[in-house]
Image (cartoon, rainbow, N blue to C red; front, side, top):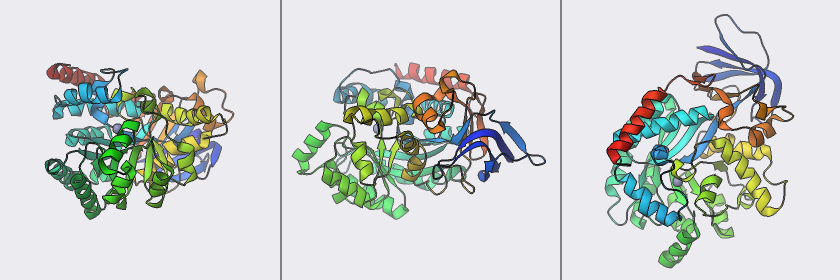
Length: 427
Ligand SMILES: [Zn+2]
């Protein structure tokens, strides 16, 4: 199918190029032209952006998709109590059906807030993959491995079987990675085994790293090292790694991450809501570390709106350091587009509007009062926009939402599935 998005303010994210009145041409799943407006060709479908901002789809670099089921279920609690007293017991009641409906609800929310690629770390992943493929999103999916000596083995086998069955599914929409939950839930054997398994398959590793002060303190007590040093010593960073949070990193830890090209998903909303702290984004960027943004699961956010993360990523550093020049709009926008794609190993194919890239494109409302006037589209997107401003979303060349209407998901059926699942789980 040929598609022409015309009459847009094109925010390409390709070396800062912005086209005031431009168009994006899509040939099947690939962008074939980005530039000044051109007339439609014979038989080409035209979408009129009506002067609205046209930009690459957003990347949510860290989430636990099916946790939409626990949105608002446990708030205002310390992280340890939240996790061990509420979330883990609730997760014990999950079944694949519940994970499917929870994931589908998440996919609906992600599409409606402009996300076109996400990184998911969870379990019963086949259900999430099914939801992802049906809704036509792109995702890096990993089976979360936990466990001390020996206990991790079944989970790792599941992760490997998942890779064999689904890596590359949906013409490359789905990538299967490995993951280690965290230094406090995984033993050394698990870390070594997961690293080797990822290396053998040439895939990435998704981890939680130094999210809280307690995690670091306990790690020093157990290993005499930081979580970063433990993961490095177990060979984890020999693989492309997406490290979520990184709130408590020493200068040495940052150097280790930079040397090993470990990327970071920064989750400011979750880190604030769980009172974990604020990551030193300025220092990490200064060391050349690739930083994307993530929402984390909806039990600790409680939305999947990447626009919120972009804005907070920018203003939090300004406020913490009393320097309003820190993390400008373009930097924040890069985190949610080009950096996110690179972090997920997709930088060569996604994150920019450029000829030859996969066509993941979103269009913002041309007449939403909160977006007007547009003096600088980058500022508009980061400081003024929210997920509800996305009117149209195209993923791999296929429209998945037009004028806010979801085209790949039956929302009513999804909500019914979610409610039935919650009833079954007694929640
Ligand atoms: Zn997480």
